[in-house]
Length: 347
Image 1: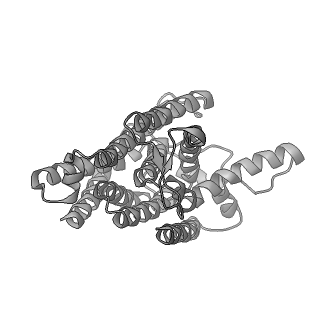
Image 2 (image 1 turned 60 degrees about the horizontal axis):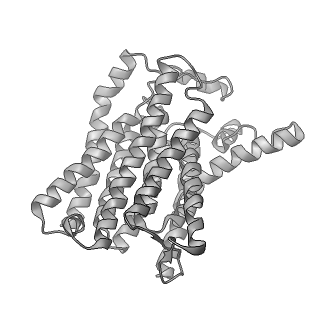
Image 3 (image 1 turned 180 degrees about the horizontal axis):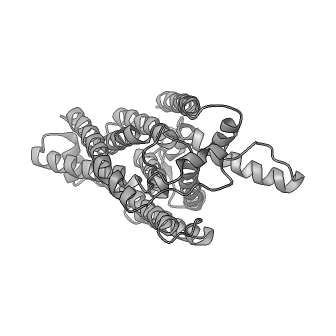
């Protein structure tokens, strides 16, 4: 029954997201909510001017609706592990559910920040959207609220591969975990945002990451997390129907910040957030390329990469967008495979 529920979650998210494209894309086009291509990007991206953005709304609706419907079905059936997790009076089972619900709400909140940013860009015609200070403050508050929720509900342990027992983060040196986790969430969400720069890239990479955490949740027998990961995979797949080159819609910050939040949510739901450092390796490479470019330019007044984030460097080097998506997806697959191997060996 649990496998059926996860398959149902993926199917609902894929179908809802894909079908919403038939409605939302023409609606965004009619409202002229099109992407403005900055002059600092590759010149050939100018052909994408006016492509509808804020399309992340499609998979946000698809994923959230899928999770809700699957939980309702599980509750009605009751003869399954997901219902037991949701209804159980055991503290550990409650923690599983709280991680999932709090993580999903965190992702929605990040998506809301992205929506406001997109709205300012495309409706108010302020091309830079929210200021860096505004986005930073909002994102840190969302991340802090998520971590505070976990702490107040007694979820005060984390796991590291090869460490057989859970690490207590409620006292002593373990308290360092919380500020580190705060900056980890903030940095990771913005790394995912940077990955959304060419057709199909962010959706493809996140699809692979969600499948990785689906496998982790299966190994841990965590049905609620498995449903969430399945829904994310289905939502990304449904969006790629419209977003692969040539993209007919962009996810915008609405979608990329949501995906950053949901990737973090999956990692924390597993109890092994550190695995995201390998599974999400590509995201970090994208962010690191920007930091290196800025630091190198300040020091030498020259550019190390032809353009940052690094996917634009490969574009400027003559790689097609499809080739970049395939190569970066393969790198993500390798990172996920290594992370899964370490996870299984550590058990």
